[in-house]
Length: 252
Length: 302
Image (tube, rainbow over all chains, first blue to last red; front, side, top):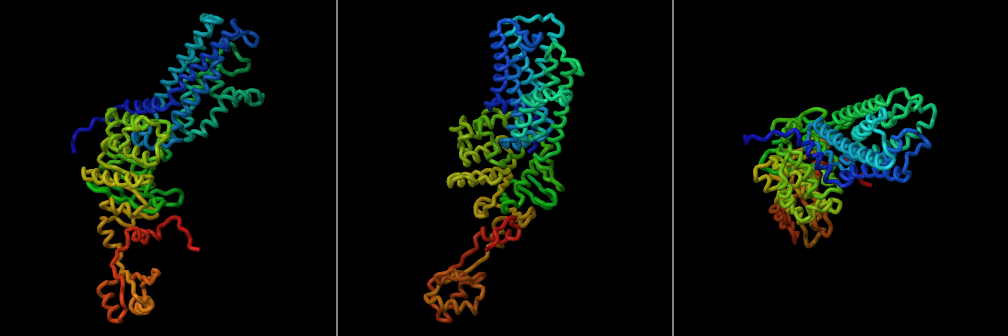
């Protein structure tokens, strides 16, 4: 009975999360879909024009990040699914029986989400940059260009973890999809059309984060480009803490 | 060993589990019985640290589940066979659970073979029947080769062969020295499987006893009699055994009677019997009687 039992390794919860990710098709296909949509649509549009489209804006980043509007749908879905599928299928019970320390469980989810987000961000921005350089060209020495590219990479893990954490708060995949997809894809854009709400909508995470992806200043924006990304990071941090609080307080 | 002490779980004012205390000892199968809604699943969830008790404790080898270092090697649990992602394969489902404890890949193959699912290891769970999902759930519970097993209604959805299989599996696991707790709302099933019974109703402990003692204590004797002339028998029983219950076709059940004396009594009154047999109440009836007051939702007789 007194056989020494090897202590649980710190990496085991992360390995379990990785195994959950690789054994479920909707999960492991989402990053590929995100990169394909973002980089693919950017490449297609830039190649179709053949030169930089300056009819609406002088900001070359508008064209480079055009595909992101589509690719980020897959990023949002991945963030929701990483947590939501556990609630939807009921595997959360088994997950918490295997890793009863809810902080360790949540930390593993966050680590996987951050890692996947970074990988998707690097591949997406890399692909969009390559497509843009090959077609319409890009002046990397123009002020703010490097900042906008780095912000584009970081935008992905921030968005993914934000969705992951909010799903943890909601504890319901359907509710998370219902709330987050229109909020990110319709809501905040629609809000900016209403003058009264426009000022408030500027502080929503996706609006603030995407401001860091632009070179041109939007008149009346009360923060700078880099601050926009920090604002988004603050949202993500707040959601993460709220998720932890929910996990600790509620029965599984 | 699993020890539950004064465990209580209240939702608002309603107590789903109410001051429950019992132990699950190694080396035997403990049947955890109660009508639906009696608090069995809530109790198991509190043992696993999924639900927080309002008061009281549930300990595994003297520690709360959440404080165990490698919990799946102490306790294997099957709470709900349907709580699996239908898009994963059987092997995929076990792989992530194994990964949480750094268990080798061959262990997932071993437990799949043990429950008879080796051939469908790479099929998606979507295509599995409830019986196959029960087997997969048992495979998951056995992954860590645990010293204790908690199985919530494992025979649900199993066919006759599956039920026989699980009975012999539970027996073998207990004989290996493991503590096995099996919940069920079917008394007859538990009578065949369990060495020990813990019966609850409305979250309270009703009985904590060996199966044999439970049967001896609650399984009431009755004598079944039938006569050539039913009217004569009815008249005789009306005076001698007013508690006799007519069962139709001239058959009467006489509770707590002695067949020899009943036969003598009939002979004395020249009532010719064609049947005289001693039967015990089934365990199911004893269980129904015991939990009658504790049944959560009962159909009101019209």
